Amino acid sequence: MKTVILLTISNIFMTIAWYGHLKYKDSPVFYVILVSWGIAFLEYCFQVPANRIGHYQYSAPQLKTIQEAISVSIFSIFSIFYLKEELRWNYIVGFSLIVLAVFFVFKEW
Image (cartoon, rainbow, N blue to C red; front, side):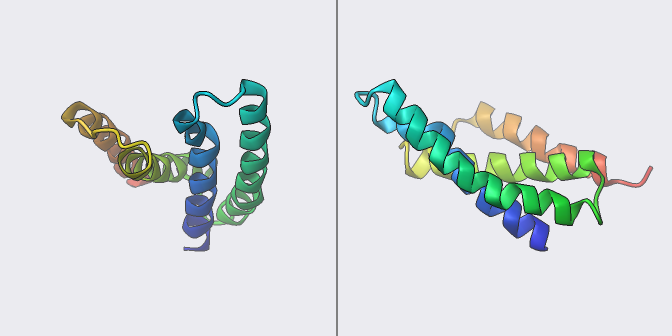
């Protein structure tokens, strides 16, 4: 559970770093890069321990799959509430396929 919580926090920071500046298109790119880089540093402060702790329980592909499922969830919420973008049906289908990957990666075959 600790891994999932840390990955969730890291994904919140990374989503803000990667996409938060889209509301500020008039800001100079150099400034946006510096701010995003600072936010991304915080992301690494949670992501690195999450993967280190998680690798005792999960394989690297499983950790990546968890991270991607969390990332899609966080991004969906962020794009709707912060960027005020519509979540279209085809986005939902595509994101659902990513989440479905969790089943295939974690299923013991």
